Image (cartoon, rainbow, N blue to C red; front, side, top):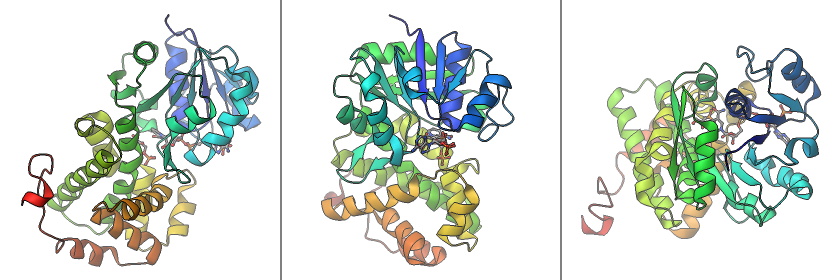
Length: 341
Ligand SMILES: NC(=O)C1=CN([C@@H]2O[C@H](COP(=O)(O)OP(=O)(O)OC[C@H]3O[C@@H](n4cnc5c(N)ncnc54)[C@H](OP(=O)(O)O)[C@@H]3O)[C@@H](O)[C@H]2O)C=CC1
Ligand SMILES: O=C(CO)COP(=O)(O)O
């Protein structure tokens, strides 16, 4: 059955663009947020003044601060709050959820306790509901300007995949399908770390060869990690892998890239986060992935170097220079394994 009604949980920039596409596609859409003044502005002026002040929103989009009213009877619930709040918010809406309602996470982060991705958190809290993941090269501010973009809906449930593809596809947004939710979700979470590293490189004024090397070796490192975590390496050839990595490592619209750039310019981590005023998931993800890589003995020199710069005050230029003298390596480990070189 095509999706006729949707809830979007989260009032930030990405939640708002997803809610607006759904409303544009004629789907009855309710967007939940905790801030009354933003909900009033969406309902009356059809604008999200804090997160997307320049984007006129579809007048049919209804904003609410009543979570029960938002999720009750929605065919699909998109969850678009920062990773640190996903469990808390899902626990709040669970009492009003029916088993046939689909849940889709758009959140690119990790819960540290059991190293859970957000779709796993949703399944943990709401075990009776089908779950999917939406991830890809999706800078919210570009989508808000209706610049052409694409994303991936990943789920083991083929009905969910097809219904979400239909609900979100429009003239400027195209949605591809994947049956590797774990790989798609890891791609979205991990690339934030490398966007921070790319921000350092840009601030240091290093050249295009350097930028290309960092992005490509980031892909090698993130796919090495993801495969150890059970993902399909081929997923990293797609939009949620190389696509999202490329855009987030290249654009000053990326919050993670901006944090890295600010640190490369000499700001402290606290100053960089404060000047951003929005969530940069990669800062926390870097901590959790580094711990996991040490625990599981996974070779991740870029993660280790980026951690030293962010949390131990190491000089980014010296760290970058040090990485050039790492152990001899294979270009594509899935073709030539590390122990065969
Ligand atoms: N922006 C982008 O380009 C993209 C973002 N994403 C991912 O989407 C997720 C959300 O990002 P985005 O929309 O950009 O984030 P924003 O920083 O723009 O907004 C975060 C939203 O979550 C709300 N929020 C924060 N904590 C809570 C809480 N405890 N309970 C309820 N609401 C809360 C904020 O409310 P308040 O205003 O009241 O603080 C705000 O509405 C992130 O994981 C991000 O990685 C994915 C693709 C693209
Ligand atoms: O995930 C994103 C683009 O796909 C947004 O990246 P930032 O969270 O770094 O802004």
